[in-house]
Length: 219
Image 1: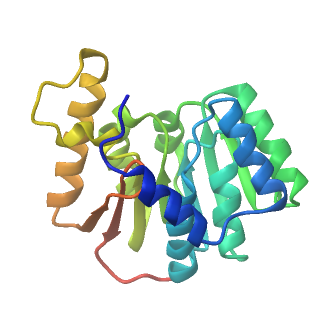
Image 2: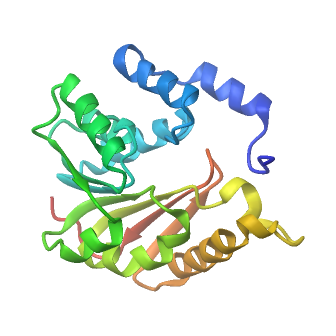
């Protein structure tokens, strides 16, 4: 599927100019590339690090662990943060736990296995930041639980919200992508017009939305 958000020459330039990961994280990037595991793009990872560094969230919730790459990125960006991350695939969750342990982060990153929405419904303690990177067609279902769990002043960061640019297409969306596209449009409309949030949509990676829950942030 053609990417209608980014330009190859801009991607190439950004990935040359930003500071890239090395060591084990670079190995994870290569593993994800070779095995078609979806992880955040390098430029999206850089933005995620900036957001965490600026906001300094003590508690982070992530929906969509995959191999643990973005959890590790966030944990490294602020050394005092603890992270709960949810992964529906048991094999992927086990791989994430191993990767997290390799970097000595298992005391700060807890991998929860199961459906993100069902687990979120069972959580009580609020979070300073929530990162949605799971099933894109379910973001609208995640929203009320994410909002409930987010502290006033907290960040809600949603990845892949432009879905290769399909959410902005005026032409008919290909059938196999239509349901996700319609639901993402509904989600974006919700977070952009909810009076309880301030939201910006950034055309980076596959599109990232950054929302702030109105109110004072208490670290």
